[in-house]
Amino acid sequence: MAKLGDICTVVSGSTPSSSVAEYWDGNHIWITPAELSDDSFIIHDSVRHITDKAIQETSLKPFPEGTVILSSRAPIGKTAIAGCKMYCNQGFKNLICSDSIYNKYLYFFLSAKTDYLNSLGRGATFKEISKHIVENIEISLPKIEEQKKRAAILEKLMNLIRIRRKQLSKLDQLVKSRFFEMFEKKYSSIKVGNILKTTSGGTPTTSHPEYYTDGIIPWLTSGEINQGIITSTQKYITESGLKNSSAKWIPKNSVVIAMYGATAGQVGLLKIATTTNQAVCSVLPNPNFSPEYLYYAISSKKEWMIQQCAGGAQPNISQGIIKQMEIINPPLPLQEQFSTFVQQVDKAKTSVEQSLEKLETLKKSLMQEYF
Image (cartoon, rainbow, N blue to C red; front, side, top):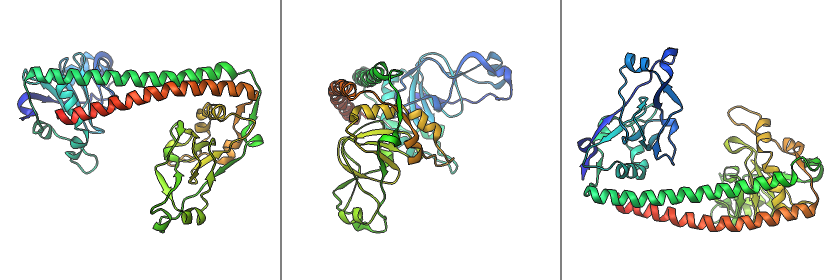
């Protein structure tokens, strides 16, 4: 084991005054923690850039290509590798590696320790890890050849996972493109409320544990709706919970829409019968509409729904708004043709998803073994 402070030089940065225009829109890369994501690996550019004057007058120091970038606040634990010389704000504790540690090995170590890093955070207003804390983190340090071997395996897995995710994204885009190709601007529109029935559900009071304990009735909340097929729910209620609340059974093939909060406007297609809470609007099946078609027709109105949201801290969409939504109304045979296409794409997606799950499981297992 070795402490990071013994094998790395830990450096941070600062923010040139935003009120001095001459400090900004220069040629030097200057990153912030907000620019890192779970998929960040090697970073070559930033959203904002600083000038020579900003560097000279604020004494900013660069860190070299290959430095392992670690966000130390807002959020803690995001990591990447500098693909070139760059600067950063004060939200980082970056690690310039010595010859005894391979930077990609350190990157994967830190990526595996996000929860641990967050547990080290200190502060009342917001949590932060200090330079001293980072320097005292211990890491298993095999020989450099073994470090490179482990990093190469993890990098290969990471790249395969990215490929699978990109494949899923492209398959989703393929269906959306097919939808617009077949229907957009070719058929008249109708208001949802003029031809389709909508309903919402309810929440059994939490003061009665018997409404939830050992429940077997699926109960869908708005937070679970995330633009996709729904085949299970995270929560369940009992018969008495259903009987003593406004929750109600929603049939399979209904389109569900999240009406409140951060997920407002998200759309899902039920492949199970379920109950829902009051923050879910269900558009019930109709013989004049293919379920898959109806799902994509309503999904295409997501941005419109978000624009209709009322409320500040808790944006919401009412059933009244959803009933006013206009969707394209093509002939049923054409909808069914589209549904067949969707089902074929879904088979391909299932294969990719299974491969992705295996890759992610293997990566997680190796991260636990290595670190």
